[in-house]
Image (tube, rainbow, N blue to C red):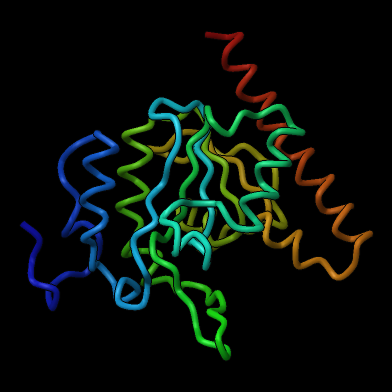
Length: 218
């Protein structure tokens, strides 16, 4: 049983001792390990193949994800799907999730605008991400954006400096970091978007090669 809300400090208070993703997903629906649950519509857990070779981690669900309960179904998710396809990665064979499972937002008129989660919220939710990694046991983790990368590699990690570099942290599968697809959508003009999209696809092609290399060496 979870401890009383006043005593809860992280998702650890709600995570069952299991590697069954369905059981973890059901338990995550009740998580109140930080205050973000109070404004979110629902928990947005990861989804995908249970034994996926590659696990993608983003920052947090957005407005459409919060409403649907599914990760990466909004504009950034559609761009991710498109770029994965161009890179030769089948999303149906991957697992996609976020470092934070509840949508953090602030009102702007009738809109709900994304607000970046802070280090306490990221840390509180990290046990869910660790549980997903244990359950899926991927060969490679791809961090999309700084928040996802820093949630697993520490606050000193910089995507701008180590983009595409394979990191092998203790206790985790190898990790590669790249940008979040939402950053491509925020590019200043069409030429910038096209350039950044191409670089992102190149990063994903590198991921596809790493997975293929593992298959050949197996």
